[in-house]
Length: 105
Image (cartoon, rainbow, N blue to C red; front, side, top):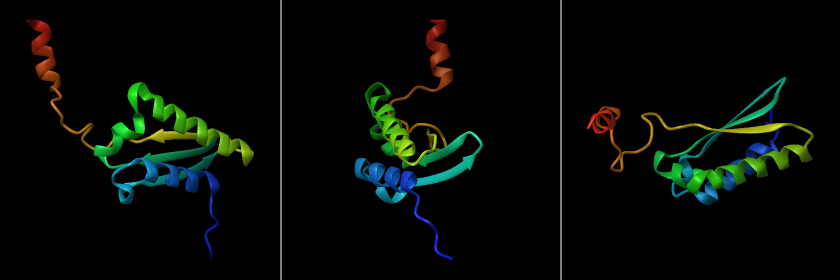
């Protein structure tokens, strides 16, 4: 059986792979329910900043584009960006214990 190509999922994969440094790590899952279509995006932890953008601007733009593709196909499409396991990569980030100690001072 040949799997039917899905426009919203293919578009999102194409768009994200063009933005990130690790395109082989891009994974898009698609789920359909009574609320519409949910696309779940997983990328390499080092690429999260490129997907989110400054102040979330890139993520908002991606979500808008995905919704437009959905409207063209008469579907409500939402995007969920999955945070990588273990949270954000460590780049001078303080642990919650260190943050608490700072507040106590």
